[in-house]
Image 1 (cartoon, rainbow, N blue to C red):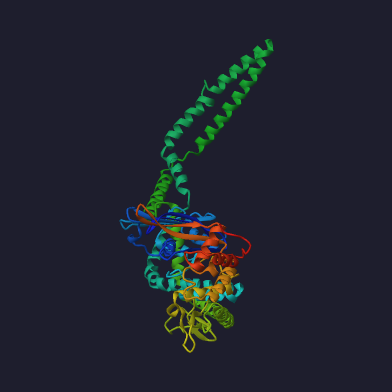
Image 2 (cartoon, rainbow, N blue to C red):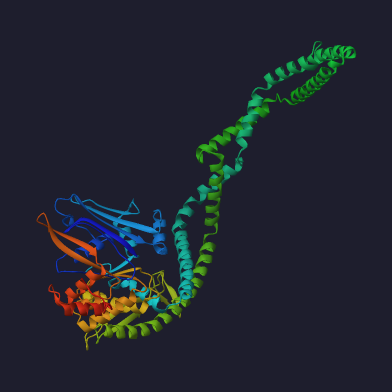
Length: 573
């Protein structure tokens, strides 16, 4: 729902900030006061094209901002997630139109293109007036109206699963066929590269070990010299560390016989002698393994050189070499078994075309059943709303696929084009006068009629319809007092399921408001300024009375207003 709307420096509006409530929100005002300006501003907020002419004289830019409650709107969340815009329970949409011609759009303070504003706006509001946000005028939405009326979710889900599976397989097959000539051309190159890599068979991590071994082999003579010197100093020479420690050990042993306090350090000497012996053994064993063979050194250098050459050709690391080998191996196998792979995919696609066709036919059958019911109920609702001789028709057609078209499914052995929601094309047709043929709704209905047709549809679909806010601008055009009462009652009933904002000049509709707002125009420093304010109960009575009798409010009109509002015993002061 729309929680608040702020408009600044737009046409006759200097600045307004209005908060809307749940249920039926009614806006009234004198002709020319600015009601249509308010709706135009809402249209801009939802993605209509903007002109610099709307910027109020003397201002640099117009700003329109709306705050919507979208906490449970999963479709809006999905679109925001897809566009990496943070989702909050309250969604803030803002448009800025500059006198210099720049036009900026924001969703949750993130700059976005106008196309995204329009996409999100179509999920938030159905605006009925002279605006393209009227979903009834977008033929592609008609199938959604029909499905909301009576198509079980499980039928749609079943079809969608087959559709996505078929689309995925078809895309894979087309990609495979596009790659066929490229793969065949590169087959010999892949084979050469595979043999080149396999002849060396690099192992991830081996370079570090080879470089360590290389460093040791290149310094083998120095290692031999130093280990010999260390071993002799510790153990083998006449004055080795081991001999000195032995002599000290004997001396401390004699001292401990005289003074037992030397026993502790005697133990330390024994530990030192053990440590020297361990080090000597390690150095001796290491020296015995030192490789002075130059052939091993050359083999390591050759191996490192081969690895370096491979790295230069295939990505700069052994990991990239192995990844490239895996990729070209897969591509080579694909080229080797191309016909078999294509045949497998084609068989799977043929089977899916049949299964998808069965699911699409089940959907279509249910839609045809729903169409009969909706035609009858809409005709009854339109008659109630003052269009008594209407004929409403839901046309469901399918398009045969051309022989060269691969975008098809099989239905009873015949080829048809298919879409994400089935193989039906749905369009609403209407005639509002007796004896006339039905014609496409989007082309023949007037603004007021479209609004009442939408009201009729929404009344029928109320519990299932997902769009949270409906705005009606010209719903009472050409409506008599008796029908106005019925239109108002239909709006009131619909407001139990949707937030409704309706601009009206009829007291029968205004009297049923849950929230009533008045648009007024006044002079401010000799300039016209439009404003809007929420009316208190006493003000509401006077406003409804004014709609009944004009500027001069009579006691009779006040009494009539109270009756329309269900306030018979209350007075307006």
